[in-house]
Image (cartoon, rainbow, N blue to C red):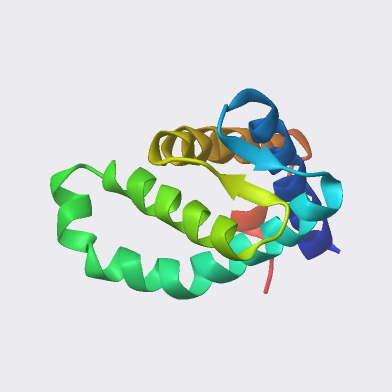
Length: 119
């Protein structure tokens, strides 16, 4: 059930970001749901590899390079997801920042205790 709620929150976050960031487009809620799955998959596979490979650069930049990695992940997901597009790099960076903040806020709003759940 929590996975479904997180998926819906991520899709809603994508729709909100698309509303505010020029060059960041989502063609409806169904496209946002598909994009949320693709972003999660890309983030857990290629994103993990990118984060490991760029770890020294992330340390030197005090973690700010993770924003660039998240922007790259968004562009990768947009290239393979119908109805989801990121026009340029600046839209991807701004979208990655806003997506993180909005997603965090919505998870906090519904009291999604991801770090304290029992496994």
